[in-house]
Image 1 (cartoon, rainbow, N blue to C red):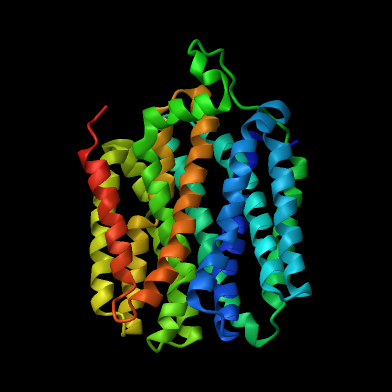
Image 2 (cartoon, rainbow, N blue to C red; image 1 turned 45 degrees about the vertical axis):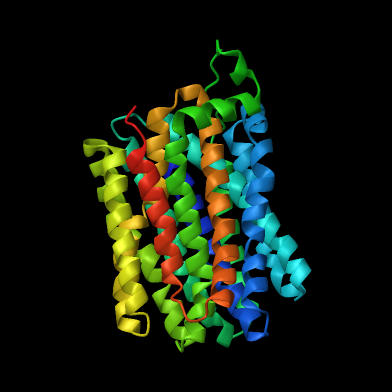
Length: 383
């Protein structure tokens, strides 16, 4: 069996290929459906399948992990992902693809819950921000490369799905060499935390403010990858250009993910979160006025990624700081749930917004969401 250090990098590799498959799936299916004349509102609704799967799986994973450990949860989740990806080319039907999206979402949530909880429970407080920054950085790397697969549509429509499925299976197989461990289980003196619902309630009371960045990142990620390609084509941008612009957001996060994690270790998660949210909001406000310029979008997507592209990992670090060890599995689940709620809201609100306000910039919707999160974090009293 492998060492703890090797195990960490295997978990990071799993996160990377998961980011790759997610980053590919959202814009790829949006482009295919748009080219076949599917309305943007239906396209956006269809894109929520991935995150509906995450929500469906979330309430049922804490007890299996406590009973069977981290490894079986990750193994089953990874298997669901690569099998579902391989099935996409077999039948082009909206309902069938929606079921596959839901299944990918279930598998991804199992995979992320397992890897995320394993990393957060084994990292020390002094290195927590850096360790989780690696998690976010490599997820972002996968997400950066994923949208590039839309260019393979010119070769064959099935090729992007096959490439992603094979990569997922190869990385998944490395988990077979990792020794299984179990999450921390303390005897809790508070009666309400004896049930899963009680632990979720306790976690929400303590760390609700740390769940908002995950919501915001989910909204950004899903709307930029599923609705912006539709909006971009409608304002005159070419699909090939859009497939290069979209990854700039995740690419920007790769540059600053680790430095921001280390800065949050030193200056506090809340302070860094407020800074990146405010500066990121300014970038999207500027993008609304310069959206006709591909060069401006390249630059602003990169800058916004350098700022708000780290929201998810910073939120996890913030949540881990606030919670006791025995509530971390519930906390990680709730981060996944709020991320999913944001990811569902992104395509739904984005598709509705593009249909209802064709003359308004899509980026104004993102600015409004970021303002709400900034105000909530700012006015939350320091604990």
